Image (cartoon, rainbow, N blue to C red; front, side, top):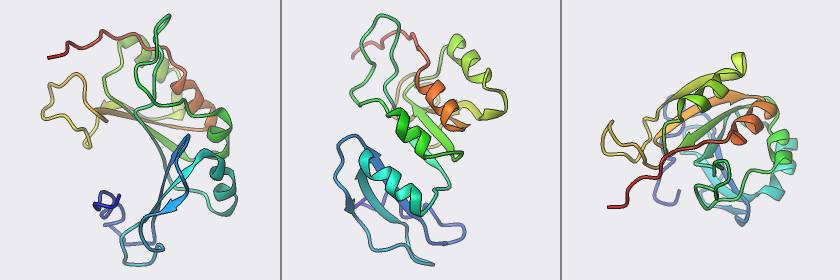
Length: 170
């Protein structure tokens, strides 16, 4: 954020925009000055404990869950981040939730996503924000995204068991 990663988040209308990055143990810190008309977004970090208080004062337009851990049956987590607590998902209410993954879901997991019906706002697709150098990359940070609406749908997709083959380390 300090390097301007979110500088163009509101480039279309330059409306006051606030980006809050939440994680299990982040400290509450403002990184840029207050959100204002015609200015780059206000960016801050916060721990999960702050979220219910923030949600009481203003509702976000969008929530993003970047590369959450997915658990395969009888396996360790496929990453190192802590799961998003259920009470946090409930606090966001009916706000759309975009989830990024490092990999494309196998067919079984895609069927689970599609079972959400109208709560699946965007089926899993390759992300324009992927760190991959090309379209053939199987694994890359934020390689694929999908979007859902409702705390129950967000909880459901974050609990999907995903079995994938482990990539070769080169």
